[in-house]
Image 1: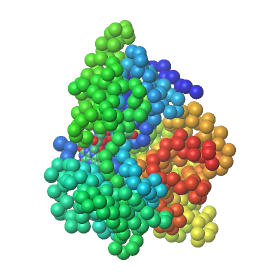
Image 2: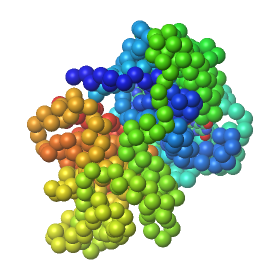
Image 3: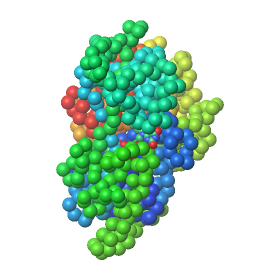
Image 4: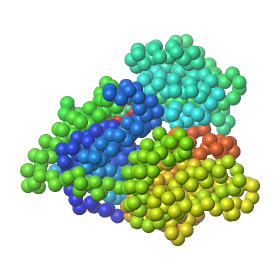
Length: 558
Ligand SMILES: Cc1cc2nc3c(=O)[nH]c(=O)nc-3n(C[C@H](O)[C@H](O)[C@H](O)COP(=O)(O)OP(=O)(O)OC[C@H]3O[C@@H](n4cnc5c(N)ncnc54)[C@H](O)[C@@H]3O)c2cc1C
């Protein structure tokens, strides 16, 4: 069922990475009514990077901190935000229609396509089989799983060099396989490799196969100078990791039959970021360009926005719509509390040394809790072990922050030595089937605050009516366990998606585990990448980011 929004936006920005956020800052500041639709996580690709040192004016920042500042800046100028996966854009008339997968239709005069790009798969034998079990695409997320191991890094560009260096924090040895006869990034980037004796580089080599039983035990590598194929195995005989960084494919599938793209699928624009369709602009990595970086993405976003401003003003005049009525105050009220929650999570990067919550985080929590329509109870079900002690002290830190959030310590329920302690999120009627089996620190604090927000009865519109009906129609009971790490930036999305399912359906339960505390689960499900979604205790074990609808689809087919 379609849910057409009656209000008319001046601009809908599709994609909440640096390009989209920069366009939102400019359009919001110019007092246009603008919304950013992001399907996964505001901040885009760069949120997986812990170290950015080349963004002018910022000597050092994590990708998530840098982009969260951009988002807050856009929000302060009145930009709106929604987590929504755009499935179609009808660009045929002055008023364009942007449809999301949950059936919501946004009406707008202008569109900015800031869709970014996704990691390319390489296509070697064994790649699909070992994805998540030895083959990875994100060093920040999965590097830790290869602590003390040997890994191969495929690629010779900026990301491959940067990620190889990052991997040396964990692994014993990195062998870079570069298909060309030299690196394809700037000299200043690859010259850093000299400082890392544990990184070996093999030029003109190609990975052709990964093999093994449950994990990658060997890789076949071809030397293109001689044509010789050799087998790579770890010196200690253990499993190896393969990290693939061979570029990105533009996320333009949705618009491929509607606007002009080049052969590789990148959007063709003029120097004002205009596409071939009036009122439709593109910015960032999705465009044809020589350098795909944050600095060029934000530049495109600013150019697209300022050019679009003129188009919107002219179109309003032509259609007799009058000036845009948007003010920062009007939109501020529309900003979802969930977005505030993400802000708090970012400041947990600088958590207090002598506890979990900083003074700043407590202040921000008060603002979020203030908006709760109903009371929420956080119940720690604990025993005598160290995880219990950690959970108990975490819950105790939340005592007294706001009357809408109550806490309980239950040290009677856990009977056997095997039972694991957990934190249960409840509303006034009792448990809502959302549990944390580890302290939700790091990036998981985000999902925790959003879960409380949902338990209070707020944020009901974050899942469209169509999807809600599908979830309510699920016949069987399901247990959704998300195996995460607290440094994983992709994990909260899956945790939040499972929690939304649990909040909608009485027969679904959602649990979050910090894998570093549960080596037995890592072993049991053979997990070498996060996020990992375990459905019904192993009936399905799935890796990678997943949203509410995708998980609902999986459950429908079980
Ligand atoms: C490992 C790594 C390290 C990097 N290091 C650096 C660095 O140190 N310095 C630097 O300057 N750059 C770095 N980059 C490059 C930088 O991340 C990109 O150039 C930049 O993020 C591009 O921004 P963007 O907004 O164009 O796209 P993205 O960041 O890709 O954002 C696009 C957004 O659009 C969303 N989206 C896509 N389709 C839809 C849809 N249908 N509906 C709703 N939302 C949608 C995506 O979820 C995504 O969040 C790095 C990249 C990687 C992968």
